[in-house]
Length: 313
Image (cartoon, rainbow, N blue to C red; front, side):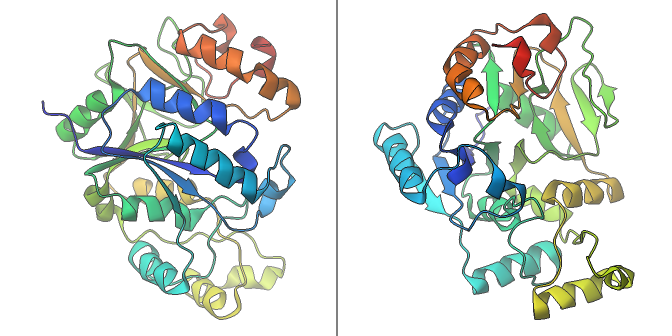
């Protein structure tokens, strides 16, 4: 099979300054694919939600300097800021949600507009997205992207695909709260979409649209009684309301359609998501990355999506 036309897009924000110079080169090394381009997407918006209280927040100047360094070192090919122009937002949201909205981030401060922006702006057939805090192992003799694309072609209802969630267990068990089913010992099939890592065909993504907006509970409880179209109008006029996570909205659409997310079962590639942002973790991160790249992990970590810090340092 000919290699798919694919680009790698990764988010960076001021919250990522303490670790991005370790994780981004690592993700490029481990994916080890001839991408058409590797793009860093900078979120220039003020930090909101729980993002504003995270440890290790850097300045915008530091973020610019680090991204420029990654560009000069040929780790990435291009840097682009999320387009927050109101006209662009309205046009993109009209297509995505079927209505223009004013919210650019969800209630946690995660960039919803940015998530749509990178699929919209990618010129390749496929876009691979990674949040910049993710960690990945891939054996040198394996290519999970080509494997994923081949499965998406065999199963047209597989809208997204990603590597195994957590290092492999001997019996193939993955410990997660959301239901999934095995398909022919090739992949796990799930109606839950995860926004931290995914590969998607940009044109096929349009088949999911529009995706209904999901609003969080309002402080003024009587507003919860409004229909979704009225909540949308309220947001357009007043800016009131906080959107739920983009992954929750996409997951809801998967539940309502024939489409699903695939998680590859092949143990030769797997990811870990670190929740820890402590100084001790940041100090240990280069050694952790070294172990992950070598495929070395504590046995108790097997099958778990989130990195369990106390097992690693």
